[in-house]
Length: 320
Image 1 (spheres, rainbow, N blue to C red):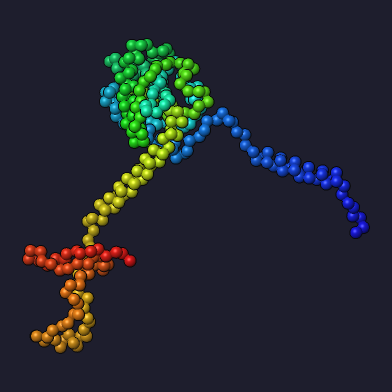
Image 2 (image 1 turned 180 degrees about the vertical axis):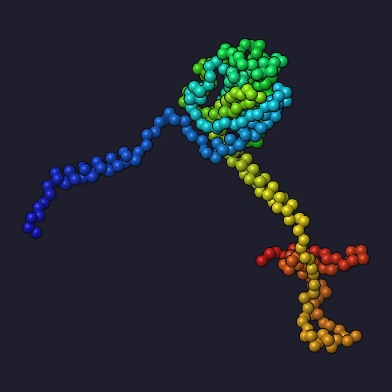
């Protein structure tokens, strides 16, 4: 046709280059920046399981500390999240009271930290004071104070071990003490930890307790967490079944058993006289039906129980 012309090879190549460039720009626009130093994430359902586990730990710890300190203690779980160890260490106060924990039979170390705002009032209470002093020393604890705190730490670790018993048998033990977060060398800076924060309130005084568990240890227990959830669900379904039974037990049902014989007209019934025999056409060895509220449930036979008639169940009838 007039006005048409052939495209040169250079023009064709230019069109393809523009199309290819546009596709690359679209792909770049959809791409997301990824930091390869970011810790490998653990599953959300596993984090939820850890959250529930430490809610139980908080409740048991509140009871144990109340008895130990002879005061009302409330423990609240604040957060459960995954962080790089460097980020976890940066939010800890300095100086503070920290212990490195072994987790036998598993490798690696966990970290337990008690804020100074919590440590010094507890020390005051253990030494006979009220623990409500307004002066909060900003210093490291001494060796004598640390030995006094060891009794408190044993209680915390015992409740922590009991809480984790639902998932895995893990023995928490103190390996070392530290006061400066920057000097911690138990994990690499970019290694991930599950950070658990709790508020401990004693009267008007409160402070934070932090627990850091290596994520790699938590991942190793993934199957055990799944098993615990399946057991929890089974137990919940069993509890629901028992609760339903308790509700239904007082209910009344109509129970009856009768021969399924022939029918009679009213005229035949009125014509019956002494000595007449009615043939039910029902073999003696054939079981009778037993119904509950009109629904067939069992088959059996009529027997004597003392001076009364009774129904002896021979077999249940499957529901249709």
